Length: 353
Length: 276
Image 1 (cartoon, rainbow over the protein chains, first blue to last red):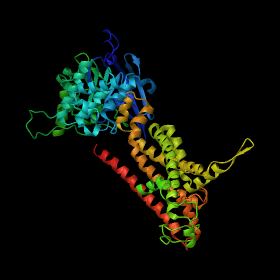
Image 2: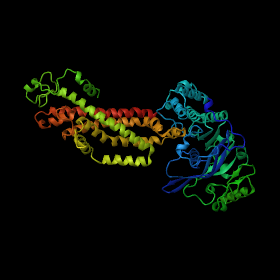
Image 3: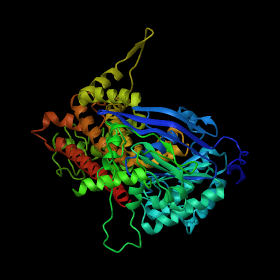
Image 4: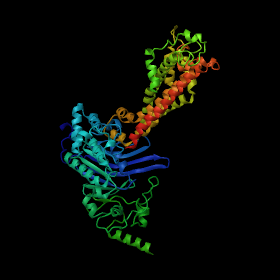
């Protein structure tokens, strides 16, 4: 097993595992450039978990695929830098990326129904990726796959090895997907909405599993989700994305206790809580995310924001630091500040009149 | 289907008369012995007094071999080209689709006819005249080439949609090499569609062989194939219709059962697909 464990821990003060600087991914379409990811920066240290949160179309998935280098060959414009262990991989061709894929960075996809090959036995799908990177015998690969299935807590792994994906339940399939991604001991695991397609009852199990594996293997985990509740107890740091940009970034505790961005607040309010009386109307965020081709001049969230002021429509707020180190947000009238409260009060006054 | 293939395979071992020889018994009944008129020759005889049943089975042998091998060529070459085009897209796809379209735009029979003629023509190389290919081989190659674009296009379309599935991306994300992905991830999923089209292709090739026979571009006229038998019986159709209708019926039944089999193959794999 030692061959597939991540290398010895880098000395303190060394380069971070993953460093993303001003990453932009634009797609060419008939209507113009789609700004799917538009200037995102963050760093991820070894063994840490970052939660990337945002609603559909906010650029989360494109961000993870950009990091992996799994973008379509044509019609894409990329800018900015992605450094993995200090090596620039943002502009590396697939040929070079292949040695990272699987071995150094793994990926878990949203839908376990479609991310396993329907006509290949589960065991083979795991050994396949073992063989892609490690020069081991068939029997050894099979044993390794078996122990992987065991470690992702698939019951009766011996039998499951020889079953086809359609014989497995959704939760089991996602466990298999995780086993496949972990097969060669990556230092970075990108999980793109790993629980969205699953039953609520299995969601927690799969998330706990990811967390356990992450801790056990001292792996960095990027957990992409639209659900703030998912990242709440698990991520060390949370990045909130909106319309391709980072709109708020903070350590998880800070984010929940001292959120500054109205979008984060709106996201949080759209989660039902147990202490609400039943039949309480959920507060949905009104409207839809902006058109990523024709972006508004001001703040991208302005059209849906409860705090919106004239300035928000004219000038795009920069990412500015909050009170706690590492806390950044993109708002002119932040939540919980006098300006913010005044802005909101003004808006509510207008509505009542 | 089993009857046709079985008969074709077993033909040499069955107590049948030599398909090439005239049987006096039939000949005595007149050259156009109708079915059932000569004892022991259930399906009658042909204008040359040869046993129809025997010729049908032997003919099926030749016809099926030609059609199957031809489609096999199309299956392998068309399949490979289609897979690569469907998976890699881009320039590979443009070139291959262009080629397929060019071939498909030429009427298949005319293309096959031209190919047979070219392949059989003695090629004069370096001043020394070499004989052209065997007629059977020429026919197989010609029909094979004609079937490449048909299978290629189907494979390409199917490979394209499968290549966009998440599990292909997942395999890439695990560092699998392109050719490995094509072989292990895409091909097994595309195979059912290819198989059912290939079975239809065999049916089409049988008909095409018949057409070419009538045009005189098939194997030599005394070798029994269903097409040749129809072609030979054409002149006497008003006197002895069974000489044409019996092989025509064989073609009809074979094509029908191949079509049904093709549908069954597709349906069988669809069940699996639906249960996902």
